Image 1: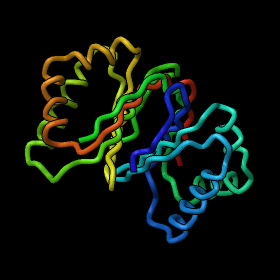
Image 2: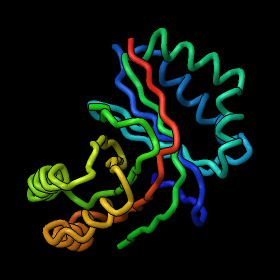
Image 3: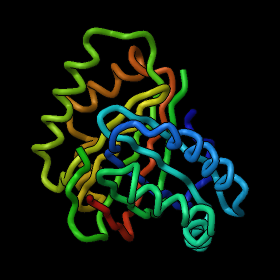
Image 4: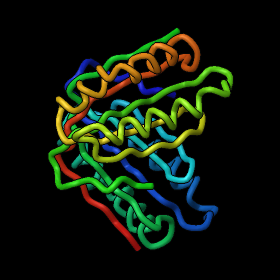
Length: 105
Length: 105
């Protein structure tokens, strides 16, 4: 789904990753983290796709909401597992969305 | 591939899309546009993945480079075809990357 986001400015976290071998716990943790993020104040939406690399973009009302989510204790545990088990490489980019536009048939 | 980008600030264009039925011309046009974008001054890199939705993030040195690419005549023709043929829906978000970090095993 393309995320429904409010009028800019708002924030985006672009998470680009290369995964290790499949791990059966990854998908359940991924779903759990999404459910948790959705409960955070300031969470606006998320978009995700995976081919050779995975790209997940989460949208947030402000930078403090992103920091708060980063410090969420369950999320911190999941991030440690991500580094030790699931990801070979990843990059995180924190961005201010300045402008957006859309097209629909 | 995860794009190698310089130290922030720089810009990102997040292009999220839902495609129509497969069209054989889409892939060749997509490759042609990537080759053209790479020639633009200020182009820093691109990341792309597609599952239910497609996410392509292109990175740029500054906002003027993004505007110049938008006005590129071949790109303008491709964008018209995108609306008439390839995409059911898309959203474009222009962002300033304020911070980034990475992990590699």
